[in-house]
Length: 457
Image (cartoon, rainbow, N blue to C red; front, side, top):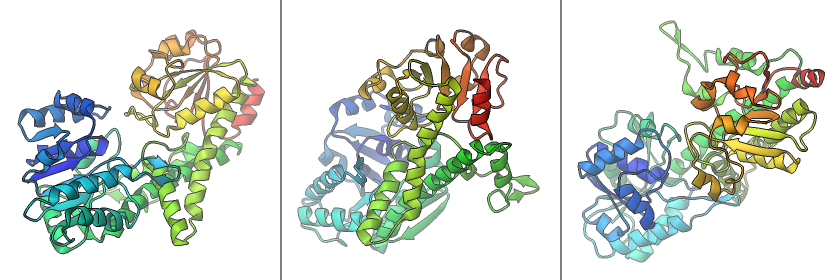
């Protein structure tokens, strides 16, 4: 099948490379000539394990191409996938790229013959595909819906494992305007062995928001429990969560062995959620609820808890040092999680901001985030080039991502250059690491933490 994909960003490029590897002829379109040149050379403009090799493979075999020319990309194609960004604009998604893509596809369909499906993969609020994309394509093309197909096909890709998630999905959701639209769309995924659920357009849009909202809720629930444990002498969030995870409804046995499903990774205390999806999508669903006159108190609390978590972590650092003014804090990690270079809505950035607001001297290091990306975020003057440099002379270190570089570090050598060997573990990633006896180690979620810190000070 010939497929055109509008948008060669994270979702578009992963989708295009993976579909090409399954035998489809994929043409990606992007407005950025610089990005197009980069991708044509076989380079991926962002960090995603496994994608660079896959991209080079499909470029070499000729099943994947990238261009700025939508007309050329749509020549002979059966499906046009809209995979443009819908970045946050306040608490609502910015649909300007989506609108432009729909209009441009409509303009191309005006002079084309044959049945063509327009599929939205961008994350949008319920009603967007029907009320905006369909109407724009109809108006610009002069063709009525039904003469062209329309689908909403949400993505469920996790940064850091997006290629694996796409190639081995647990489900494919096909939101369809009519049966013919869905039939063509299912043909795109014929080689994928998973459940393919056909639903309405609005149901597909809501499924994506429901998925990310549930994950956000689990994280905020875990962090609220973590904060409760921190104020409860004798409690440890790791033990509490271990007991919770053993519930057979969360972690059943198969053949006498615990399944330990991946959903349990969201039931762990940390520093809060971030990234390009969870905060934006929860806020968008809250906004949609307000428009429909439906209160969303659970989602409101999820966002409130997430925002509060940074303050709670900073309070631990402040108590450990007896104050932050003039103290040097080494922040270990900038991206919103390990395995990615994405700084969007990263909780580490919120922590940096709070620490600096309390007159702390802050330095940071992330083994994946490039200096260019840090510079775009206004952080170039805070970033060090390696772990040893960021820790040298620091009064305390705050771990914000569980990157393997940190887990496998020589902590005897690394902490020897610190002014005071205080390590606050915002991810509870170093609990099983054999740290030097000289290190004052404070994992999050441990009961009586503030009392212990005050005793040490």
